[in-house]
Length: 495
Image 1: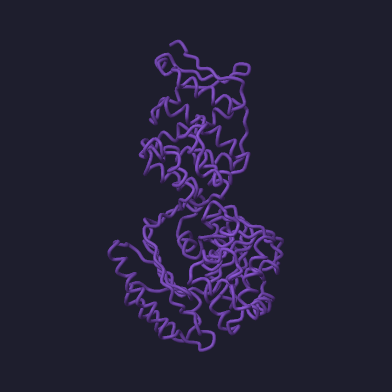
Image 2: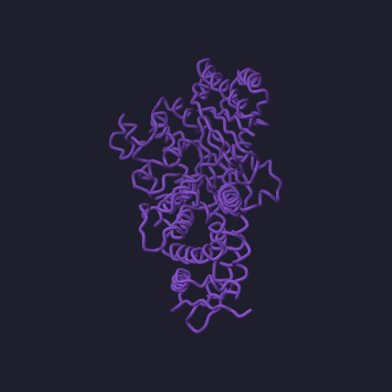
């Protein structure tokens, strides 16, 4: 399955393994074509832009054939929608790609952008904004549904054209056009979700400037008071014909640098007009929202994090069924120890159980560090950066123990102290369960925990008495410490 996304700034083909709650990308290629350039002034797609887009789409059609794509979903947005020759362009595309091209309305763009955020951040509540080359779509999201979608002529390429390449003038245009918004300020919603390549570049620039250890923008949350000065600086420096004073600007791709001040102008005016407290960046937008809408309601309600981690378990674990023993056993441990967990902590624990065997193929000396990379930099969604760091930390401890320091300590510290403490506990449980069962199901359910005064006791059935070795005793003592007990013991029960 694939999506051909014909935008005002670029055309992109994304090939997915299949339609699922947790999408797996097999191929992703973008070509900058600037189809939206000049449309507001001439009402026409420029010949040069169309030629560049058509050339890229010919390549995409070849990719689709080579990868044996079963179904292609093709859609176009504001540039094609608003141009007089957009229909002719679409017919040319359809001849190449072999499927109809759906021209989305502004309301549909807003709807699918909102669903894109919901697909990756199911608990998001606030206003979603999708900034493209030709337009800005806004929608209210609450309870996994979107409301009050609207579109504005505020895309970055359009702003360049309408402002005469003046970022300061562009900011004035944004203020004027946003004054007509029925979404901004409609409700007391304090979080703004930012979608679009220019805003992602802005998020990455912010990460570079603060030396943030996790270089991905999905679910990257920043206080509005922190991002606004950067936006204002970008606009001011561009107005002065220089961005040399903007620290970290070299981390932005050359194709985005010229657009960045206009994207910054839009974000700053949106945040001020809506009096938002926080902006969270989303790498998922119209494409993912479009596919999410094709799922049945039951699948839409699935947890994307757990769905992705189950998929990883099937691909990488020695025995995927063992994860269910870990889920039940760790829940029993928490109950016996009197340790409560929130729904969010529970889903993180279950996710950790699914991916706990992710590094077994690596050399023993590198399993911890490689697992950190596989988890922290993976494309799983439905999880914020603290939760991502928690999962990486848990699996690192599971492989490395508690004495060895990781080279990624700054990244792991994003979990925060409470989650880091929980990571140690769950990892300590894994370090007991894995040698007990050799990563195979059926053994852990035959063991159980009790508490005797201040000692956490692991009980083994008589036929498993040989598991009571020195190594296991040491790990049980460590588990007891992490669970808050004075000591740990192993007891063999008579048959």
